[in-house]
Length: 269
Image 1: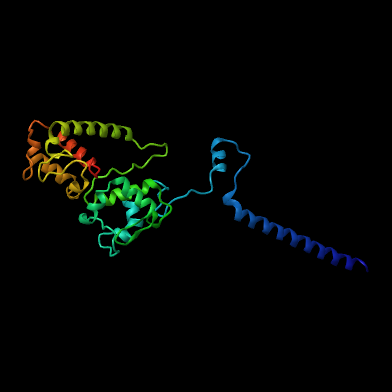
Image 2: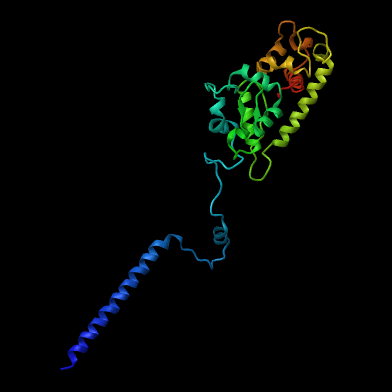
């Protein structure tokens, strides 16, 4: 007569225990499913596993996916500078790219001065203001310099932009480029001292010839661009004889002499 209540109690207990087991099993599989993609054996000490565990959670990339410091001048221009310096921009007092007349007096100040103004900011004498780094504080000094070189070179100059460095440090072939630039400068000075000095010396009285170190004389010539200056020097222009009157000079020697004079007079060829 008393076995029936005990049977009911046993059945209820079994049902309760079964329900708890099922619930725990469901929870276990849900947790396993949620974390299965991130499972790793932290005891595994092989090199690949260790590198994976200590790898930074993320890396800093700029808006276009380029690591900080690696953007070329055109990339910086297209992202930042174009707002004020685009060819069709209507921002007052800012030189517009490809508008050589806008850039000529700026180019005459030299690359270092232009870069300094771009990095630190600059207020023009007639109005207008250039914010430091174009208003983008994430830009490095080299990225700003590359942007300045890009805009100036599209507008009559021939500036040498800082090379993008590889992860290991110096950009490839930078030392070779420096050595070549040094040789060219020495050749240019030698040609100048031997030939060009007669008309282009700083104290020359020869009329209508730009005098070396006289930036104002050279600014409108520099604005014409490197190719035009070289063509005029090699072929002759008005009272300027072809190759300065010395046909034995090679085109490369004439080019070196032009670059030497320009670089001493506010430009960067």
